Amino acid sequence: MAVSTARATWTGTLKEGAGTMTGDTGHFAAPFTFVSRFEGATTGTNPEELVGAAHAGCFSMFLAAQLTSAGHPPTRIETTATVYLGAGPAIEKIELMTVAEVPGASADVFNEKVAFSKQNCPISKALASVPTITVAATLR
Image (cartoon, rainbow, N blue to C red; front, top):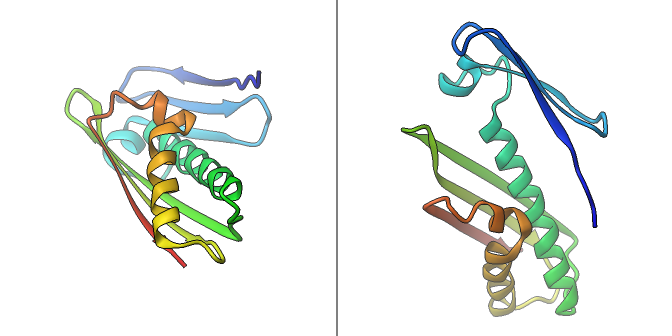
């Protein structure tokens, strides 16, 4: 079983404080604040951006595995995840947009693997409580 660990440190009050999110691999250390999370400032990241990155990465890898198993290994998959944080606060919607270069794959096979990946990649499963998750997929 693969095990991954990340941590967040927050100092101060919600609106005046600041924090850092890090992964134990040492590959990222991201600052975040109230403003970067709720007001759209680009001076730091936010948990929803990291959820989006995780979902896009997981979906892309899972789709690659599914296509390869079907005899159509992809040469490139690029997925963008847009995460909508609404009232509550709660994640209300995630939109995945993926473009895949898959030589020899039919649209039917591709769309089947996209739908399966949307439902079954581990991050999609972890986000099952999100009311709306959509995928717009393009085969090239």
